[in-house]
Amino acid sequence: MVDGNLSRRAFLAALGLGGAGLLAGCASGKKDSAGSAAPAAKETVYDRGTSGAPAAAGDAASSAPDASVSIAMVGDILVHTYVWKSGEQSDGSRNYDHLFAHVKDDIESFDVAMLDQETVLGGESFGFSGYPTFNSPQEFADAEVAAGFDVFLHANNHAVDMGLAGIESELAYWRANYPDAVVTGMADSEEAAAVVPVIERAGHKIAILNFTQDTNGIPLPDGAPWAVRMLTDEQVESDFAAAKAAGAEAIVVCPHWGEEYAEGPNDAQRAWAQRFIELGATVIFGNHPHVMQPVELLDAGDGRKVPVYWSLGNFVSTMVGKQSMLGGLGHVVIDFKGGSVSVASAGLTALVTHKVYNANLTTYKLADYNDELAAAASPNLEDGGFTREWCIDFCQNRLGSGFNAETCEFTADFS
Image 1 (tube, rainbow, N blue to C red):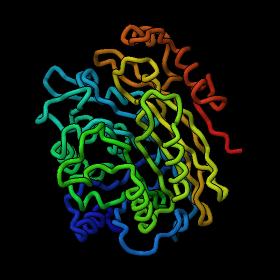
Image 2 (image 1 turned 90 degrees about the vertical axis):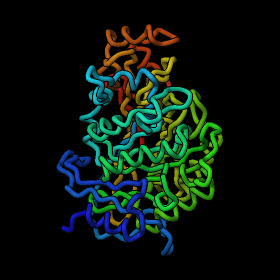
Image 3 (image 1 turned 90 degrees about the horizontal axis):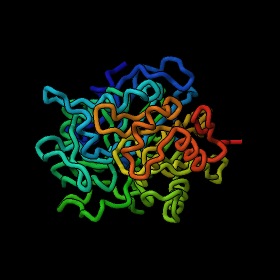
């Protein structure tokens, strides 16, 4: 087999994208959804999608055998001051492995694992900062890759907190240290912004589309309206067309949308979700509200059911309210069978941020959390009363009957 990294580099070079801010996927020993060893090659194909008649998602010709691919996403990596301080070492270095230590095994088990990098990893030259304009250490990238994540989403309301220079600094770090990572949603050149990421697993192509509804009122950089992928009709339709032209059989949409702290989606979210589905979305993983919102199965009108995770909440933060400490690891299995594509299962693993102002700050699966830990975190929350039971009740209320209070897992009902 030809070295996938070499072929991708040659492809990008031919397009003049050798310095693109979108980076390709690599080989991995991850497990497939059945627990057996996944194929070693994890290809990523970037295609500008400027030629060829777009086909419906799922109609792309593929000679690959039938397969199931598992995809997961966690919510916002929201790097407040005490989040980045938690990784400062006595020798002056920084390490953030502790934030992901309790979910690492789960993350590594998925064929594709995504996260929402809410803050720019601009690095030391900008000075680290928290709310309201964030700049975070680049060592977060090291920890995220080590934890098993493949896709790093950056279309969000803080993407231009450090301007175009911040975007350039972060993407240069990824390019220099993890050239096989998939970083999307922001770009440092118009050529890079034109690229739609299409990853390949088990011989099947999956597009990842990432958009944000706003940038907190901060204008896009002068001369670089392409720096952040915005949630507009033009951008959405263009990206879906490009994904299909690139041969994507499944399309995963990751919008940064909605209202902060809202219990559920607003009318605009519902309208966008319907539009994504009309255009061929296979699954929708949403974020931005900083709280967990319900998971719904929407009817695509062609026999498919499309899971919509309205908001996965935060993965890690030091926000003041206890509801912002609950988040989810959303996960689906997509079946590629007989030329058709469908979601076979959808679920969510409840997560909880253990909010303390030291190196013990981390995120647990709620199933592994206990009252002793909750008691240590409760005084650090504005609304107090933070117990494991409260966490379970909150998840039950948000996720409904599909949530199992014993396992702290939600399972969507496809029946």
